[in-house]
Image (tube, rainbow, N blue to C red; front, side, top):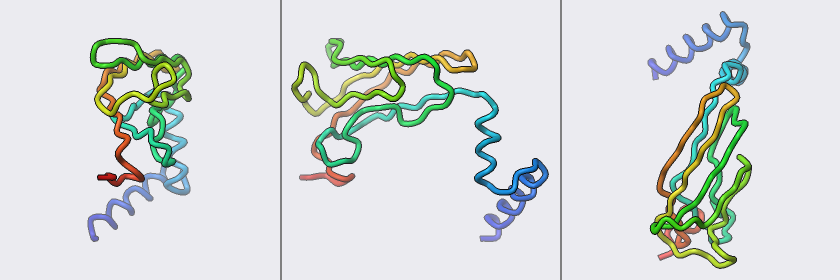
Length: 135
């Protein structure tokens, strides 16, 4: 408890020295640095329960160009989108894909000129409702 209080006091003092009145104001300082980033999740559950029903960007900042492609394990292209706010609903050709591991390739460019390349597994897990296993 003592360490947390010391950290809070030091943070509060540094915010005051920077002209910030509260911790929430400090986010504008971080956003103004111009550093772009993008983060993609590794799983989603397209089961119409209202939680993680589509695969989309988890978080990003300053992305001005974006392209994502979903592949199956044989390298077949299943879906592609070019809008950072777009998403994949876990279907191919109008039919739900099977639960399992798929792959995403993301290429994005930030307003700071940085090119972001993400290659990662995407797990489709329909057997989960609101974070709990149905089985």
